Amino acid sequence: MNLQLLKNRIIARLITPELSDGGIVLPQCAGNTATNRLADVLYVGSDVKDVKPFDRVCMDFRGGWVEMNGERLISTHEENVLAVLEPEGSTTTDELYPKDSCPKCGGKGCNNCY
Image (tube, rainbow, N blue to C red):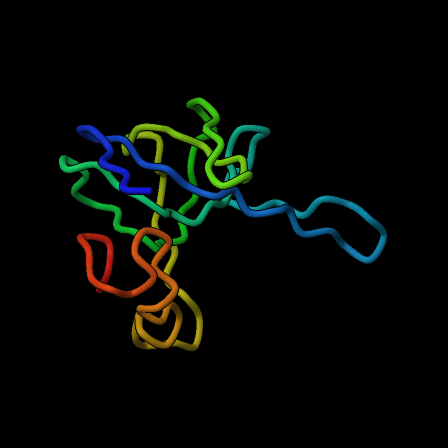
């Protein structure tokens, strides 16, 4: 599937919340509310400036759901992203996200690849 997002839209995969040993949901973002969630960005529109594919972000959970390849993803605007999280203990994007993990092309080369 070739996906071309419009303007400042992003599509992201919400991250399943972490549970404590006792089964309590641990907050994912600072100042956590019911709407603040962690997500991995998969696709970005042409006008998105501060977020790129494969970024892990804390976002205000606003937007709509879209189903792709049997997976439920969120579609939202860039302005709903509160912060981009930097990975701990890693210095390069290639270490975290090999090019062959691109959800769009599988590493064959596209606008989403590094």
